[in-house]
Length: 114
Length: 112
Image (cartoon, rainbow over all chains, first blue to last red):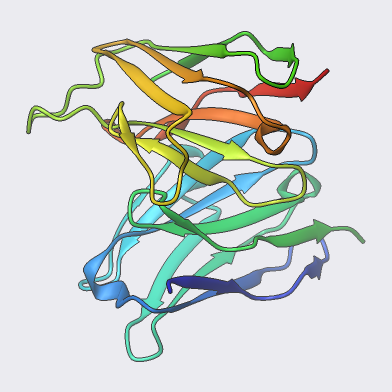
């Protein structure tokens, strides 16, 4: 069974960074793209970007190019997303997803507050 | 960016009724390989999204055949036959043909 286990909720101060993780079991992440999607409170889904864990190649939505950094560790079958220069409107649930959105993590709530 | 326009924004239906949700894209979603990367997701309350349909009309794993998808190019429809209580939530269309990938704004399905 494929499972994506995301790291726990984060509380970050404005101007700081957080790093989220997404550990995959039951599937080798080398064989898929890992996507990250956010959902602001009460809002819809927004694609942030994807990484090819086999070679580290990334593609970002324009608005997230200076906000998010995607990495992956194939030895631990884990994908990561670092969010930098946090602002209040970065408060959201962040999901990892893979295999054409067939599998999703449970989401990580990031709250930005001083 | 490809804009995905979903209608209606909300629906209220009785158990056993059938419903349709429309999704229109601002560009054709046919990729250079000839496939159309339009998908339908359901986000049940408090849950992560779940993929129902991929590439327009293919049923996701474990998804009941009450769900069906049709369409081509820029115009797509999700149909739910014989709605059940567990179908409530927000339905999203998503395209993975063009970067950046984009989602529709969602259709909230409520049960009467």
